[in-house]
Length: 223
Image (tube, rainbow, N blue to C red):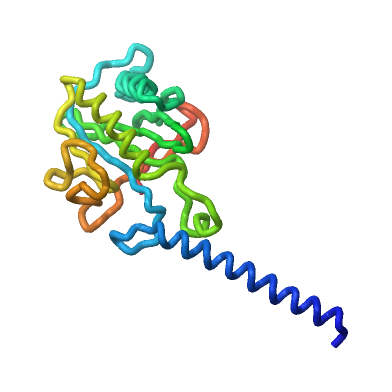
C-alpha cells in the first residue's frame, strides 16, 4: 500500500476518534442536565402553569378573543420588572401571548380562557426555545432556565393577585394545575411539593405560532 494512502487512512482514523470523543463529551454534558425526576433526556427546563378564576374587563381595541386587557396589564407589569416585552399578540379565537427577554433569557407568557361554567383561565410561562436531545448534544441550549421561569412567574403572580376580580390561583411546574396538586403561588422547583400532572404527564403546552399576527397565526394546541 502506498505510503500516502496509509497516511491518509491514519489521519482519517485519528479525525474520527477526535470527533467521536468530542460528541461523547457533549452527550455526557447534555445527560448531566437531564431531568433527574423521571430519568428522561429532557432539556431540564420546565414551565410554570397557573389556572385561575375571574372576570377580565373587555378591551377597548380587541373584543375577541377575550383577555386582551389582561395581556396589556401583564405587559406593563413585566416591563416594569425589568424585562423587555414585545407587543401583545393573539392566537385567533384562542388567547394571547407576549415574548419577554431579560439578559440571555427569552421566555413566553401565553394564556387562554377555558370552557367552564365560571370564567376560568390557563396561563403558561415557558422558554421560547427548547432544543431536543440531539440539538443539545451539539451545543444548543434552552433560551432560559428554571430560575428565569420562576422569576417571571412571580411577577405574573403578583400582578394577577393584585386584581381583586381574580382568585383561586393554582400553580404547578410542568403540569396542568389540579386541586390538591398545585400551590397558591409559584415556588422554586425544589420547594414545590408536587411536580407534573397525573402520572407525571406534561401540561397542555401552548405552542408559539409559526408566523404572522392575529388572523395569520396558528391556534395553540396541546402537546
